[in-house]
Length: 295
Ligand code: ADE
Image 1 (cartoon, rainbow, N blue to C red):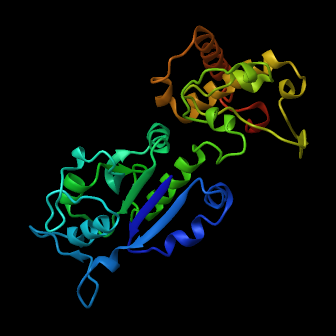
Image 2 (image 1 turned 45 degrees about the vertical axis):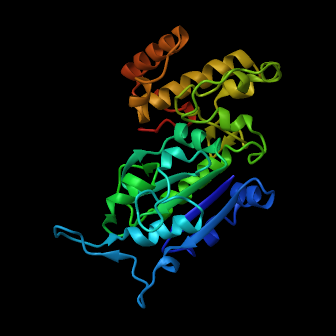
Image 3 (image 1 turned 120 degrees about the horizontal axis):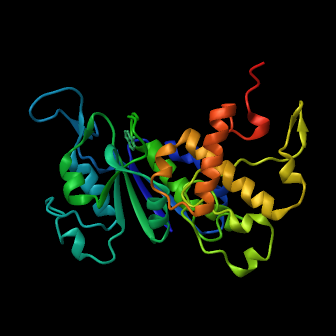
């Protein structure tokens, strides 16, 4: 998979991906990341990439010409923008997906990441200043994407978030690919025979919930004990505990997700137990060892 990032800060990406999974994925040839300096596609002495907004108002707007030229240099048709206009974007089958990062975009989700992970090539255009000339979004980009409901000073962090998230989903990038199928926001996945033969993790796909709490050694950390159920070796009980704590965590931190997931009868029963316990104990939404000590 290849990512091309168009930015006025190409140096931003040099350090970010020299670590961990994305570094390894690049070293193994699973992913290529190329940052392109938008100013290289200007033709004036000041290498101008922005200008004042038509109609007045605050701030500066990224000009369309350098962005269109940058895309042209990547072999991407710039519909309707002379002199590069060639073919409508929808008629070019091999055209890579072009994404404009902006606070006005559709929200980036794990679902969008999965979609992108299936592509060969993605081009990320980093917005800056007060905005980007709308003709880029209308005619050059396939989609406008935001990484969250807040305003960043530019699209670079968003592009980095997208590349990181998508890279983890490329087969081979993460040591144990099953782990990416069970984490938060992952819709249910079929339990493969080899998995179901194993331990309790096989039945704990997050199903669109937040991930369940995880623990590692020591079993007792400064008086905070790991939940007993996780050390007793009963896989059925562990599976049920994980589902229940995933539901409790989701109810506590992201109740909106519960409205979107298909809950099983067991889930509904577990949720009822959680709500009842919350009513009587107040803190059931957290794993036992994390419950706040109010004494
Ligand atoms: N640029 C500014 N804010 C942004 C956001 N939330 N996501 C992506 N790009 C942005």
